[in-house]
Amino acid sequence: MSEIVASNETILVVGGGISGMTAALEAAECGKQVILLEKTPALGGRVSQLYRYFPKLCHPTCGLEINLRRVKANPNLRVLTMAEVTAVSGDAGNYSVKVRISPRYVNENCTACGECEKAVEAEFDDEFNYGLGKRKGAYLPHKMAFPQRYVIDPAIIGTADADKAKEACKYGAIDLDMQEQEIELTVGAIIWATGWRPYDAARIQPYGYDRIANVITSVEFERMADPYGPTGGKLLRPSDGKEAKDIAFIQCAGSRDRNHLKHCSRICCMASLKQSTYVTEKHGEDGKATIYYIDIRAIDRIDDFYRKVKENPNVSFIKSKVANIVEDKETGNPVLRGVDTEGYHRYENPHDLVVLAVGMEPSVPADAFPVDVEINEEGFIEASPDNGAVFAAGCSSDALDVNRAVQSATASALRAIQVINRAAGTEG
Image 1 (cartoon, rainbow, N blue to C red):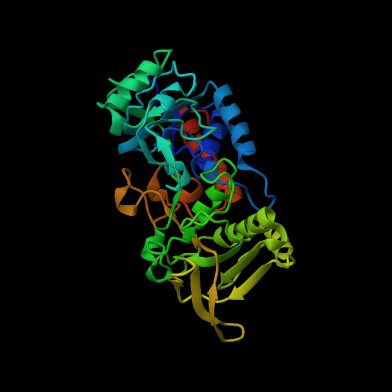
Image 2 (cartoon, rainbow, N blue to C red):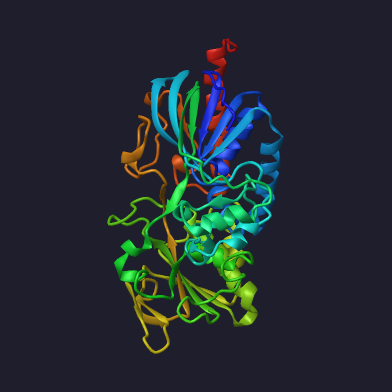
């Protein structure tokens, strides 16, 4: 890896999802020197794992492709993947940042030809598909991965599989001797854009995610609907591989709950409304979606989408917080139990598949931040003068949809640019 030159006129962006990419590009296109760090092997974050956006139902690959073209074309922007901040010292305008870079075991000679993947036999749960499928020990993170370069899983280093991968490469791209590196960067401002993670559905015991095969999460369902996903776009029951045509969506699974996440995750209502359209899109009149909700939070332009979904005769709404889910042992169907709070009727409804709209929580736990920032009760970074020149972008600051995350990232880039301008003496 070539030497990285940075100074107190450099902006560091931590996290390469949609917010981090946006913040980095906005700053770099304003002429500032930017270093973008991503912990995983490729840029894209959670957005790259979506099948479609709401409310227009367009594919995220379009927006990602545009951003990746901007990244490749900008000489002010340096991208480091498999890189993680371990320590931060200093203050606004002059931070010293320690970064640990994990070995990829694949160098820049890689053409993404895939021969190493063919040669390797070992398989692992595919993180990109939330464990719904398998990937090889040599793999490309996803079809739009940037850098478009393979990765060797460290678990096969020292095995015959690793040797097979190296022998299969015609370009000398496999370097099994790569070592972990630690570098130190001097930067003037830091944009923290480490995003969110889905709440652990197994902690919601009454819903049986960890014991009922046909109870899955909203993020898993999103990958299932994608034609490039683990099921080729078919909505299949994990228990028996049969197509699921009668699907229940449970809102606020772990959100707005004193025992789990106290906050509203904002995106869940719209995500389930969007996903209900997948059911009727895949199965036509045979598809049936039922949404169990406390209340639907769809405002502004999104209300039109909500009204459109409500007009679909194959989508029904039950105002209720589901009490629990049991499994019909004969059919494998999850059976939802509760009370409809509009008519106060008890129900015991079987469905082919249940999708839990799990809440959003920050990717970095409050006790794991390598930099001193003010964090609220939900674990998000508060906007505070005590944070110095560390600015939260996107879902590091709150539970946000893609549109609002991008707006947040742009605002953070502008704040960081002001700090850099003061350091350079270009702001009056």
